[in-house]
Every structure is written in structure tokens, then in C-alpha cells.
Length: 451
Image 1 (tube, one colour):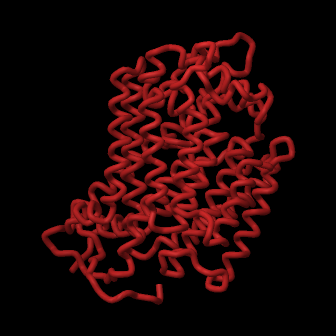
Image 2 (cartoon, rainbow, N blue to C red; image 1 turned 135 degrees about the vertical axis):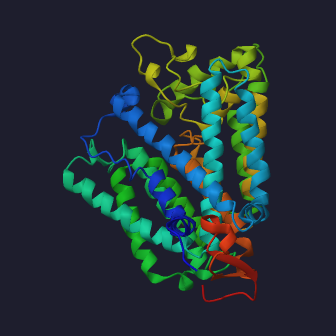
Image 3 (cartoon, rainbow, N blue to C red; image 1 turned 90 degrees about the vertical axis):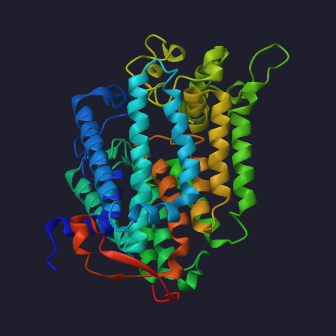
């Protein structure tokens, strides 16, 4: 049968859509090789024309992939297979997405909240779809491997330009050293999933079973991570390696207890008052200069919850920061806090967006998802991201690489499970389905231990 060009396009999307998504998440399509700015300059340039054009490209990119995967699923009952494989992820993610849309009702920037909720929903669908098809086409590990070389090439190009450092810290083609440090941490996570696929097991492989060439990549990435001087990413990378090497760490109970502990520190105290009638929060027990000034930022932001509406409902999804209006708690003349675009704490930022009661529910759902993961590697990745949000805001931020990693781990944990019971073979698409037929068919068979 003659195969149309559409067939080859959708076949490429099915096999290598995950690679395209990895390149998108790391800004390889929109690199910045210009001289790097200090943190304050980055905040001030957040609304520059270059930034706006980059956001326009990302929105078109997400919309295009959404349409592409939507058409891909229309052929050969692809949608039903997708739902069966990802059903454990669709329900909790769907609940979170429903809350995002509902919060736009009481947001003072309703249309902006609706738009960002829509793109968050598209991101959910694209990540789950790309991982689903890559695992079934058995190109998941290959996509990671190819992306690694793209990462190394981009780093080499940025170093050759002489504009990859900010005050002695490596930032590569990204705006700041913290972004590049998060990228290196992301790469460490992807290498762990690569090993998971190559060893074809639900458990973390023994060091003797791990492909030897991946250790060289670990050394290179850790070297770049040290050059970035991102203390948060460096500490979490070390902790992740320890958890991967020790099977007694990173269990289900540790993930649950860690989540409860962090929610109990940053959100739950807001529901209680001290003996003087003031709301309790962690910032009351911190010095203003602690955690590189985060103590001062948190002290200001916690005052927002003295407003009853803010405490119960919040400002609406993704409309506390990034709306063009300065939040009242940060409207201090001649202060750098006027230009902040995040709370530097994912737990606090969720409470600012959805209110304390709803934020507790969302955070509890994320902790439950982490705790119930079957794959130990994915559970460790999500556990580290829970810790990452202590000093940075990543939860439900559609352009943050750590939130993308969280979604990838969820999708992989659900889509990878039945792989040992499935094999795929090439088959020409039926004539009546035309270009929307998928090039692979799934059939039950014995486990393939050679993958």
C-alpha cells in the first residue's frame, strides 16, 4: 500500500514526539546566547519584546503538538488505548485541571486564568501522549539518548560564545544559573529513566547492570552542575544519587511523610492563630536574610492571607504573579520585591493562587501520587521535586522544567508498567483509515527481556 506523507509525519510524531518535547522544555528551540544579566535585570526584562515573542512561540508549539497528538489518537482506537494505559494518571491530573479552570471564576483576571488553564491542560495531554507513544514504539530511551547529545552540543556552543557565565556561574543558553542547574538536575533524572528502560525492570537496577557509558554522562553533567553553582540543584542531585543507590531509602512511607511534613510547615499553620491572634507561618521564625533573602519575601507574602477572600479562594490559577499588576504585599517603593515573578516556594505560591483549603487538597493529591508510584525511580524523582519546591516555585508552572519532569515521571510510571506484557510490530495501516492510522499495533505476548 502506498503510504502518504501524512503517514510518515504522524509516524515520526509517534516515535520521536517525546524528543521534540524534551528540546522544547530545555529552550533549545529558543536559545539565548546574548550576554547574561544579573537576577534583578532578568526580573526587569520579563516583559521585554524578546520574552513576549518567546512566549508566543511556546504557545504555538504547544497548540501544534496538541492538535498533532489529537489527530494521531483518532486512528486505530488510539484514544481508548491511551485512556487504558494512563487511567491512573488521568483522574488526579483531571481533578487538578478542573480546579484550575474553576479558580478563574473568582479571579480578577478571568480570561488570563482561563488561557493559562487551557495551556496547562494541553501540556498534561501532550506529556502523557508523548510518553505513552514513545514507550509503545520503544523509542523512549533513544529520545533521551539523542537529547543528551543536543544538550552537550548546546552547552559547547554557549561556552564558545563567551556569554554563558553570570558572575562566574555557568548559565549556558538559559537566563540564569538556577535555570541551568535545574536543567542539569532534569538530565540526571532522565538518565535514571534511561537506565530503567534499558534494564526492563520495575525496580532500580544494580550498579553492575547499568550500562557503563551512562556513568560518563553522569560525570559530565555533574561537572556542569558544579559550574552552575546552583546550591539547591546540587544538593538535591547528591540526595537523588544516594536514594538510587540505597534501596532502603525512598520508600512509599518516606515520600508520604515528607509531603505531610512540608505541607505542615508552609501551609497548614495558616489555619491556626497564635496567642496574640496573628496567623502562624514559618516566616515568623526566620531571619529576613535567611535562604538568600527568601525569609523577607515569605514574610511579605504571608500577610496576604489576612484577607479572608485570599485565604479561602486565592487570586486564581496563575494570576497572582505575571499579570502586569504588582501584588499589594510586594508593592514597596524602590524595593526589588516589586519585580518578583514567583514566591520562591511552591507550597506558598499554590496557597496564593487557590487559597489555603484548596491548596492543601492539591498538595495532598500530589503527595499521594508520589507515594503510590510503582516504579521506585519515578517515586524518587517526584520526591526530589517535592523538596525542590521548598526554595523554588515549580508546581503547576507550565514553563518550569521541574513541573514537566513531575508530569513525565507520572506518565512513565503508568505507561511503562504493561510494557513487559506487550510487543509491537510494524504493520501497514488499513486503507480506510488513511493518514490517521498509527504505524504500530499492540498485541499481547511473552515478555521481551532483551529490550
